[in-house]
Amino acid sequence: MHHREPEGLYRSAWRPSQAWRLIPILFIVAIVVADRLLPAAVHLGPLLAVAPALTAMFAGPWMTGLSGLLALLALLFVGRLHGGLSTLNHQLQLSAVVLITVFLVIYCLLRDRRQRELAQVRSVSEAAQRVVLRPMPARLGPLRIASVYVAAAAEAHIGGDLYAAVRTNGASRLLIGDVRGKGLAAISDAAVALCAFREAAHRCVDLPTLVGHLEESVARNLAELGGASPHAVEFFITAAVAEVPDDEPVVRMISRGHPPPLVLRGRRVLKPRFPDPAPPLGMTELITSDHPVETLPFRPGDLLVLYTDGVIEARNRSGVFYPLAERLASWQDGDPETLVRLLRDDLLAYVGGRLPDDAAVIVVERTGGLSEPPASIGLHG
Image 1 (cartoon, rainbow, N blue to C red):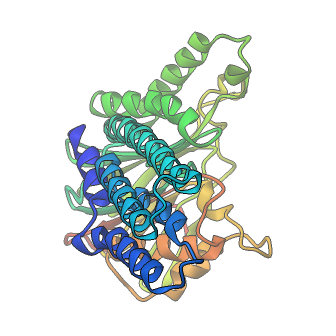
Image 2: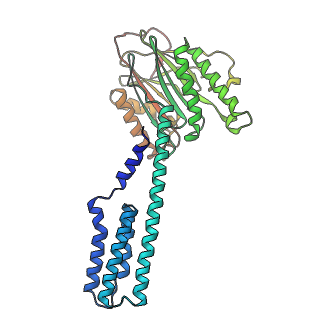
Image 3: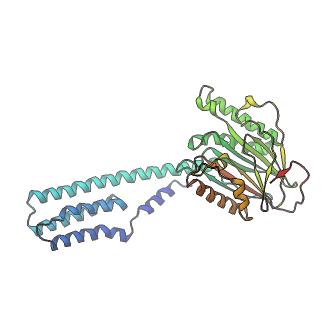
């Protein structure tokens, strides 16, 4: 993303149209005409200072200064008609228009400078965010993937939630996680897990080894933060790492304190029977043994829904949590793109437009000609 693009958007948004430019001129003309028609005892000249104020609302310093100059000329014309240019009253009116115009021009200059700086900061922030949280591929081997991310922080595109997908030999690997905390402060922590996953997903032969590598990376980052840091004491990442082999109708998964996935099969929402999940990444001292890989049936046409707790912990005005499984069951069969769009719109409507925590969702559909899955861990509706 080019740094100049947001600034260009800003300038086009503030460029006044011909109709807007006419408003101050029409106002000045109306004041002059009304002042001429009304009795001599009525003076509307002081209202001409409104013209540059109106211009400053939608235009820049040059247009504002020009509007102030026209207002000043109109005031001179009105004063000349009344024959009182030398009076103290008209001199004070002229001075007021000049001072107001000068202040408005300075305000426009400062506002435009601030907007340019903000546009540059946003462009850098957006570029950095897209490097950290790359867009999910629409296709990954036999999988169709769609994702959505809603950040809690205003003006942010990402925060503490994270997801990634990597294609390996004969399989596709997925990561979804949630850094403790939310917003921009959690981006650096999310980047640690994302970078470690993208690198290790190609080198680790199985999921336990991959998750072990993620744990080591998070532990190193925790050590670098320093044990005395309050952030270090509270730092951990809930994560789910999944692997979908090309030649088997299953999905293998290890959960580290993350909410369990859902599987959509037609109009049914199937919930895996997972044992107690392992502690989140970063809590190495709580790990007492290796946690097994869970295997779920994942047939062609099934939809795998991975999500963070920002979705299921969202509340409406009555304090009721968002009923994710019920919402998914109520929608007609659709592709991943349609499902994430419906989910995002429905979630924001449910909470009234603003989420209290970051939320991320990945929907994965298996395509291909695989048939019945082997007997393994059960799913229940």
